[in-house]
Image (cartoon, rainbow over all chains, first blue to last red; front, top):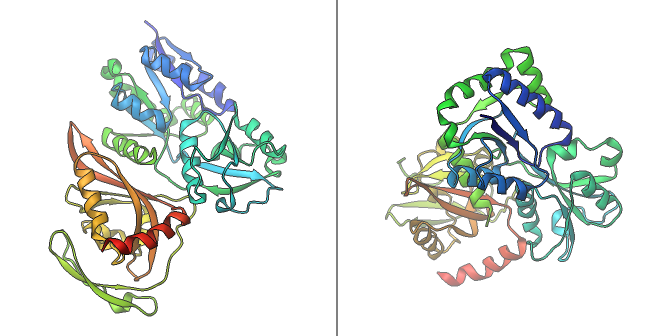
Length: 248
Length: 160
């Protein structure tokens, strides 16, 4: 039998190879076949979740609530000191110096990432803007958001802060952040399907001990962090509660 | 729950006014307040959790920074120590009526700091339901729209 690993489609494309390496480590450690399924969009992955086609998932904070409360997925670990933050940026030449100067009808470029959309819209609220007051421009990735801003085809862009910080210097020099979130609570989480519950203790232990092996540490570095932290049910419930308060 | 202490003149920043607030649990305290507004910090969320009676059980650093209280002072204290005298009691009755029914509440709130200054927030409070029971409440506050704050400054005094 082969298990299915999936990653929230908001992953950094540069880290895709890192996830394949992680999957190889996973198979080697457990002596079990694990197939890594990559989804280009959130709807495709949600369908796979609904069809019970995913056993292990690196979930974004927005989807984690559905996975845990509706699908009974169990949280295993989260990346150490790596929280999800969002940023609103404009082109350097844009007149707005702060969010409050943005007007109704402003053109907002964003990706499908639900967590970043949520945090971005929250940071627009001080300008009296909600989703009905802006003109949305859905982009496939953060590079295209930057392109829209630089070309003057969008007024503001919502970025995952990590993605913004990884844009090339040349691109970033043409952009200007208006506001960065400092939430510190919301993070991605590796979760397992309830049918795999019996494997949870060994799996969690192995993940926590990854940095002790060279191959494990290399695999983690390819994902952009140094180690995993264990996360308990109640800690996860708290994060989901916070995300719930932000959905309004 | 902690002993409810009166606010102290030595904690105030500048000229202050004084009143006595009586809360829903019939406890009362002397409240001192100034006319200084502290701007809500960009991009931050103030997060706290209380038990079902409103006693604080968790605070984040943004809460500590904005309220002027230490973590130790906030923990185990009633959340109403942040209540500003300009906030109509009807707003908090509506909050409690809503969350006790298991529903989410949101609204604009003027909060009182330890030093008598105030800050406006857009607050959301949700019941934390575990195994079908409300076990606690989580409140998340974020930067409000100034237009909404101005509306509340006009509307709230009519609710007393």
